[in-house]
Amino acid sequence: MSGAGEPALSHEALRRLDHAHLWHPFTPMQAWFDEDPVVIVRGDANELIDDAGRRYLDGVSSLWCNVHGHNHPALNAAISRQLGQVAHTTLLGLTNVPAVRLAERLAALAPSGLTRVFYSDNGATAEEAALKMALQYWHLSGKPGKTRFASLVQAYHGDTLGAVGVGYSETFHRFFRPVLADALRLTPPHVRRWRDRLSPADALARAVAEAREGIAREREVLAAVVVEPLMQGAAGMWPHPPEYLRALREATTEAGVLLVCDEVATGFGRTGTMFACEQAGIAPDLLCVAKGITGGYLPLAATLATEHIHDAFLGPPAAGRTFYHGHTYTGNPLGCAAALASLELFERDRTLDRLGPKIDRLERLLATAIAPLPHVADVRQCGVMVGIELAADVAERHPYPAAERMGARVTVASRRRGVIVRPLGDVVVLMPPLSITGEEIDRLATVVRDAIAEVTGA
Ligand SMILES: *Cc1c(COP(=O)(O)O)cnc(C)c1O
Image 1 (cartoon, rainbow, N blue to C red):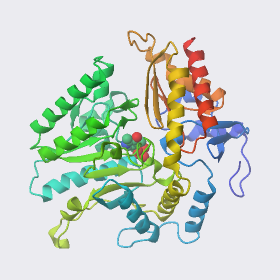
Image 2: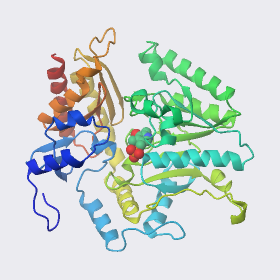
Image 3: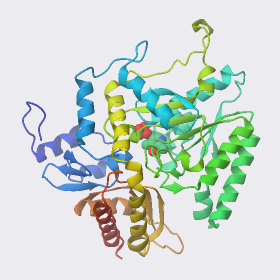
Image 4: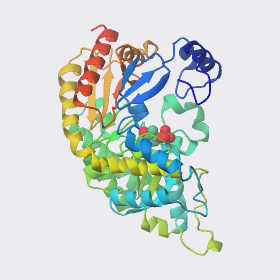
């Protein structure tokens, strides 16, 4: 419970100091002060352990990033080995062994044609790099007028200003609107199905027609369409069928617009395949990965580009075509070593082969135990990404008043039962590590069912 050589702090002291000095992300701080914080001191496979020794199933993979479980001996060893060599050196003017090896592995694993790897630290920075690459690519290709982006309604691409511009959410971003670049918003099939109550087929047809029309109309000014393939995570787990992604690929290719796939959440097995794009049989021009890349151990991200895009930046240094962009910790050797070890585990443990039955088991439990609850309005699943939408009136799809914080209350009720989940508004998110066992899937579903039943009075 204590750092090396430091005296242990009591829970009381930790709470006091946390409340005095920490500003938690995405956290209404006034409500935080009323709670006794859970202090995590250790991880063990798919469980987290607090300072009182209580064990919790990590039902959201520590914010969607853990893949093989916590405190994994192979990942720990890989990081320690690299630490015995060097913790960090720069990729500005130098290179390093894990960064080189990982780039080769990523290029081999990614959808075809994505052969260039640009490292950064997190999902938002991977997105920023992609946006700036797209803008500079068009400028260097003699089309400086292509400066606008298109993205899906309620898309989330990170919290930096450029990423917020393509990923607008009213709740999160309204204060920043005046300084954001205005993206063309495409309405995804989920909105047509859920809000407009169209059949899945009609919802898809409407969304495809709107996307095709918008992309074609704006082709002279559009630099890129940015999309979270198959599942819009932070929107509240909004799925779309592979056909929609394929239609976006076709429409962008026809219109001469780049396609950026943001696989920050969906990458590394989340949707059942290594990358979600595979399920649509498409390859984007730029691909952003982060969250799961290191197995959820260290902050690392990558933007993958085609050789064609990369080559547009070539020329004598004096020609000024260089991509002048980067971060201090770009290509960090510890992060790259963790990522290499995580990819080795995918092979050694046949992680993706073993995931199929887990996805099916989760699907069955969602259908039998959770979907029938009277205040569950919709259950959406893509692989091991799940959103359970709660509603005050399911038939009318009337939401609960926001002030009731139903999603947050389900989280607290689940935690009391030994499971950590986190909501997106009134959507309860399940996103366990890919290493979750069958029994743990049962535990996750049972606890969340009981928590929803308790909170909704069902
Ligand atoms: C989480 C997320 C991001 C942002 O990643 P950070 O590492 O939090 O900056 C971007 N895009 C998607 C789809 C995400 O889910």
